[in-house]
Image 1 (cartoon, rainbow, N blue to C red):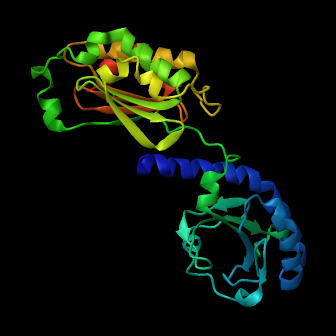
Image 2: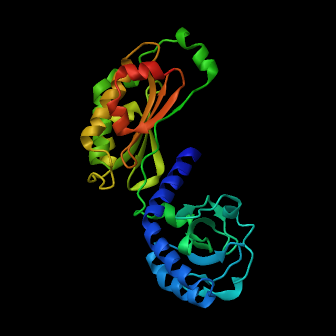
Length: 316
């Protein structure tokens, strides 16, 4: 996954998190506002409300002068040593804070436990008078693993390739490869490996006649084959049949549609043509690289919605 995809996933997780914790944090802020700034009473409210704030590792409150007015409260402990400490150097306090409602910080290293953290900030403003904030800390690693925080796939992304390749594009011409010679049978075999033999990610390099396959049973290693090995019937003896993954967001019918479109893009033109294509049925993403060295990444739905002329216009 690229850095931009990771950052996109973090942002989507943060948006999903905000929707889950907004109501309980708002209710806590109202309750704390009624006893502000009595630290003991605020502690009791935060400790009682912590369980309603999904996956919160630490909750606390501070005043308008950035001083902690509560204990640092985790699911396991109540730490009063931080009461009165100045939080002015916290990264999220260098930005404009919300007078009302909730705001999520950028990722930072927590001074409390040295882990990568996102903090949700909820204003405490009884009678529209800002008294301070409630802060709820979340470990980034927990957020990324939380299946309740559903994220959308990365948006369509295009990367231009090597200018030297683009500059000589019209001096090139597609040469029929061994992959091209086996044609439909190759795509049928790859679809079979996905639907019946546990492959969840394929990458086809048409010009160099190679296929890279990732198997659901062993996702941390990929297997590299030439097209003749893929077409060998004995290959199916090496891998047991597997049911189609329940986590897949791409249907078997869409797999075949994607491969049919790969074939069309491979043969659409002798100068501008598909050089490699990848499909991942778990995250639903398609990757394309054209003869001009331009690359594209998008969801299966986006890919199938676009006609051939779209790709002829954008491949450069």
